Structures are given as C-alpha cells and as structure tokens.
Length: 200
Image (cartoon, rainbow, N blue to C red):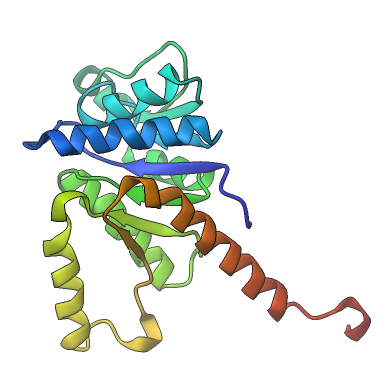
C-alpha cells in the first residue's frame, strides 16, 4: 500500500515530565486530522493518549481506540466521538491495532509503549510485515533506545541479514511526510519486483 490512511500511535498513558511531550501529541493530533489520516491508538483518555485523541477529534479527525477490558477502569476510554473497540486481552488488542494501521509511530511513553514498538520492529525484522515504523525522538527521549540498537548491531546481535528497519524524526511536522515517502518507496519496490503478466 502506497497511501497512509491510518497511523497507529504508541504513547504514554501519562503525560511525562516535559511539556514538549504533550505539545508533540497535540501537534501530531492536529496534523493527522488536517490530513484526514485516522488515528489508531490505545483507547485511553489519559496522558499523551488522551491529549492526542482529544486533539484529533477536536479538529474533525477520526480515531479508533482499542483497549482491553481490564484497562477500561484505569485508562478510562473515550466512549463518545470515536470508534471504540474493547478486546478480551492485550494480545487481541495489539493484533487489532496492527490490522487497522498502515504505519506505526512511537511518541514518548513507558514500558508498554516500548514493548509495542519493539514488537513491531521484531515482526518487521522477521519479515512478517513491511509497514513503516517511526520513532518520534522528541527532545532526545528515545536516544537510549537508539544507542542500544546501535550497540546490538556492533556486537553482531542484529546482523545485516536481519536488519531492524525503522525511521527516526525529531520534528513532529516531519512524521507524516517521512511515513508517506517510506510507503511510496515500498510500493515502488514491490511494483518493480512484480513479474509482468505477459511473462507468466
């Protein structure tokens, strides 16, 4: 697929310690809405998740919140103005988020955000999907992870044959253009590899 119609955003159920994190969520929410790109996210109305979804909906955008039943009390999903999917468990939640999205973005977040991001990186590494994955490195938040991945490569635990392909931007306004460029590049590569019908 060469077009980005829906983006799955992983981010914190807390707001974090820096105002820039909330500002990034607000800015990206507005960008998604203005570009008619659906937000797919964890469904909560708190933290960066809540800021992001509120902004998308306030600017006329569309959002799909996906949350497991056991988290509905803690993260208080928005039940008005968006599509809400309540899943039986985390595994089903992540599968549904994957199926609904054309690309993945990680804003700042905690262990859950890290786990979801790394899972998508792992699936891509193993050839299970080719959807773009982007790390929004707001104020250097993800620098330790990027350093760790570089360390893994240096120590030959991430060989070239199983490369971890992901995108990194530091500016929120670059996220969607970079995703779109990656999607176009993927589509063009797949088209170039396709065997013409007259040769079959």
